[in-house]
Structure formats: C-alpha cells, structure tokens
Length: 446
Image (cartoon, rainbow, N blue to C red; front, side, top):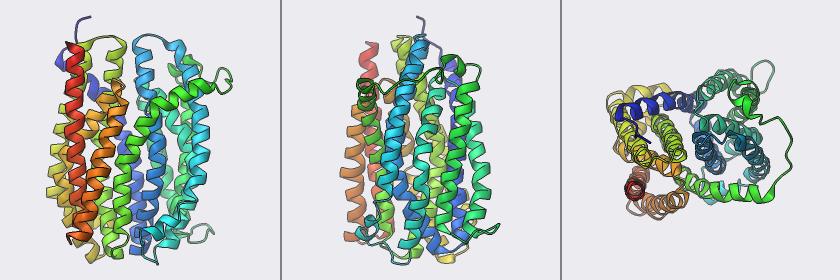
C-alpha cells in the first residue's frame, strides 16, 4: 500500500484533532470557571478547590487512562474494516466502567486522611472535604461518558465530543452560580457547591453522549445498544490488562501534579492559591497538545490496521512536529500575556505576584510537556502501553516528585522548587517517550 504524503498526514491529523482540541479546551475551561468563581469567594475557597480537585483528578485519571485503550483498539478495527467486533468490545468496556465507577466513587470518600498527611492548612480542610464529597457523585457518569466518547474518537468521529463538551461548559456556569453562591433558595455551599455542580454536569454529558451513540448516522450502525451482553470476565480481564498500563501512566503523570499540589497545601494559603492559578492556566494550554496526542493515537492505530509501516512511523513523527509548533505559541502566550491572564483569576495582590513568577517555570516546560504527551499518544497507537507506564513512573515519581520535594523543602526554594521538579520529570518523560517511538517504528519500517 502506497504511503500517504506529508501534506495528507498533517491535514488529516489537524482535521481529526481540531474537534478534540476544542473539546479538551472546553473541558479545561470548566476547571478555569471553577477556579475563577472560587477565587471570587476568597483564597480559602480557591485553595480548597485546588486541593479537592487534585485528589479527584488523581483518582479519575486512572479511569481515563484505563479507557484510553478504547481508541486504538476501535481505530484498528475501523482501519481493518472489522466493524462487527466494535459493539461487543464496547459493551464489555461498559461493564468495566460500572465496576470501576462504583469503586472509585467509594474510594474518593475515604481519602480525607490525605489532607492531614500532607499537613493541609486547617481552614482549608473542611471546604476541600465538601468539594470531594460533592464531586464523587460524578465518577460513575464520567466513566460511561468517557467510554462513549472514546468509541466515537476511535471511529474518527470527533465533532460530537466537541459539542457535548460545549454543553457541559454551558451547564457548568449556571450550576456553579446556583450551588456555590446560594441562588434560588439554595444555601451558599462554596467549594462543596462547585463539587455538586460538576457532578451534575457529568450526568448531563453522559446522557447526551449516550444519545449520540444511539442516533449518530455512523455510530448507530454498530448497534452498541442493540442487545444486552452479560459480563464476559475473560474479555473484561483482557481489556483491563490492555488499559491498566495506560491507567498507571495517567495516574503517574497527573499524580505528580496532584501530589505537588498537596505538598503546596502545607505552605501559606496565598501560595497554594497562586499555585492553583498557575497550574490551572498551564493546564489549559496543555489541552492543545493533549488533543493532538489523541488524534495521533487514532492516526497511528488506523495505520496499524492498514498494515502500512511507513504511515505508522510518519503519522506519529509528523504529529509530534505539529505539537512542537503549538508549544512554541504557548510559550509566547505565557511570556507576553501571563500577567493579564493572572489578573482575571484573582484580585489578591499577594496571590497574583506569586502566580506570575510560577508561570515562568510553566513556560520552560511547555516544549517537554508537549513532546512527552505527543510521543505517548503515538506509542499508544502501536499499543506499546507498558513502556509508557514504566517511563511515566520513573520520570514523574522517581525523578520529578523527588526533585520537587527536595528543592522545595530541603534546598529552600519553596513553591518554586516544586515547579523545578515538574520540569525535571516532564523533560525525562519527553526524552524517553520520543526515543522509544523512534526506535520502535524504525524497527517496524525495516
């Protein structure tokens, strides 16, 4: 089969990834809205949302990672024209969503002792617990929503993801306003209200995507809801084993940022609030390479299904090149517009001054962060899941976390030391993931 030209690779990756990027930005925009509205209620509420969301993210990102096995499997089936296998595969994935959703919902409610372990500021703890209890109701609907979304993504149908994400953002703002500020007779719930509002948004998104799966002109032909399948435990176990390394990888990556936030919670409330603002803005910028990495996974997986070694290699490498271009623009946005963005989050001068300083470190790790997630997306396309897991655990925990802790508390750099450690971890992951993809696809090509 003749390899695709460079222009086709780039155009297809951009076309496929654009709705994913928009949807990821929209999802992250909900976190931005939460942060801005929490900041309006003061540094304590903002700090509580920071701590609570860090614990929430660590738990649910394992589910995200586990279900990231869906797009490459479905895209390979699509590339090989084996569409009759998709629905049975998804139905077993939904059973796994049910079990994992219930498990993590209950687990989140038992993680409150972590706040004492990390010496979180006393005034922040009750508000953070309220946020965690509220948002824990969203774990189960989130699991189903992500499964439906990844099914569509794997079929290279990405516009519904963008539209459902917009729907979530449109619901998030008024629900936050009602629950956080106590409108229409509701009590003022603050951080807890933010958690309950987020859970309701996830229910809305789950229902909306279920309707997409049932009625979309292409996806409905798969007949995912056409029959009821009992749990096939060997098949569920095979899926779990495939997704487990990705789940651990996501846990390792997001867990680093979450633990760093918990470490920051032992510092002053203003420092923690500034850390949350800087992390929130840099995470918003990260949605572009993350969306591109999802598109890269689908493009590489489709080339695997077509059994075209040259396209397998090129789909990943050209995609990584695109990510480099976006990250250079991200660096410019931080350098030239960071101070203006920070002023939108908080009116507290102490918080803003610390945040502007932290964003300089965010600018430094933009390139390595983009490369590591893009290369990981390419590796998922060739199902090299175990390497991503080992790379992330080593880079983010053995190097990044240790460096953050040492530089903050032993070397005396404070919160800036935490961000220096993030640079160490992200750079290591970038070097390892890119080198691995180069080596693996070179072997395939030869």
